[in-house]
Amino acid sequence: MKRILSTILLITIAAITVTTASADSFKTTRDPIRYSDFHTDGDKIELRGRYQSDFVASIAVFSFDDNAVPLTNHGDTTIHSETDGSFTAEFVGSPDEVGAYRIRIILQKGGSFTYRVYYDNGWNFTSELSGDSKSRAERFDFVTENVTKVDSSATALYLSGNDASREKNTQTLEDIKKIADEMTASLDNDYDKAKIISAWVAANVYYNRDISTTADNTDTLTQTIALSNVLNTKRTICSGYANLTAAMLESQGIRAITVIGNAVNIAEYDMIGDASRHHEWTAFWYEKEQRWVMLDSGWDSWNYHENGRDVRQNAPRKYFDITPQALAQTHTPIKAEERVYFALLNESDTDNTAPDITDDPFAMYQPPANNQNPETPEPTPTEDLTVLYIIVGALSVAVIISAVVLVSIRSKNKKQ
Image 1: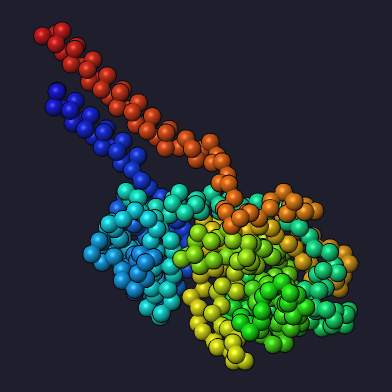
Image 2: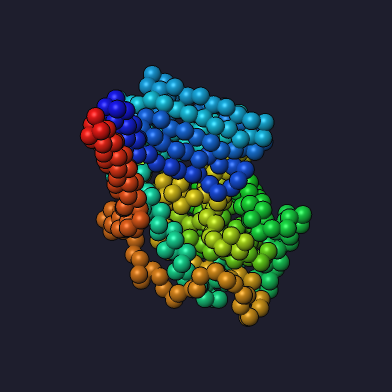
């Protein structure tokens, strides 16, 4: 009986140890045919996902100091792929130093996806080392719940620039709707329509590197991001990508907003609160699932215009329906605006069931000062206490089992 008691206690201790081990999860997108789902447990990173019409060729962890050499001496990777593009994979290993690393998924057709991961006695995607991206992701909910509706005069400026007129606005909107109608003609749901619109904008528009984005270049910037100019030249900057995507979505009866904030690549994570890294992207209201879908056509485009020449490049399409946790690795939202372009042709507003629009959420949520990240929001009680509840539960089970065994032993001794 003593051996049985010892075994039970050892099993209980092991269960508690597993429960309290470092574990984390991280999903890249909610797109069911193009995503990776990470789960960490100590020195192990498990992945599953799917990239339709492609296969995962390799998965490796790199340091930020040397992006060319993976941590091959510190871990092993196994990958199992299916014919439909779905896969499972596992990386087991540990680096020599605590800190931030990058994990890269490379597809057979050449696309690659890189995400930031941390090591501190185990792998995780949320760390205090460089700020808490999981808490920062909550800001995406804030801005989508507090959308500023832009007035018609400002909306007209985004549509046709400084020389806006009713005739020019009408022609631009008709052109936008015609293009969107043609590409979505065979589709019957908003999600697929938004996906093909985002992909079209990313593939057909070029980031104009010849345009200065300084504050004293306001007139040129206004014309650069105006939708009439974007359609005509196929060149713009991030705001133009976001505006065109939103207008095309609106032409299909899909409510869309423009999210304004900052963005950096993952190697510059510490600069993510820098207000000088201004960026704009898009979100749309997915009625079927009652949620906002984030997308960034600009960052899904690697096309650029420089020195008078257009350069076209294929991009892996990473930013459609990207999760807030994944987007928070590179983007910080500050506010969201709704520019109802087609209302310029019809004064009656369209119906919607998305969250109400406030007058000015920017007054409630200012961008961080002195290049510092805003204070981390307080975690909810559920997030704080979940692990504690599990530990207490495991300990309670151990105590009960031990008590039952002890009572059994005493009862047997009395009979003897």
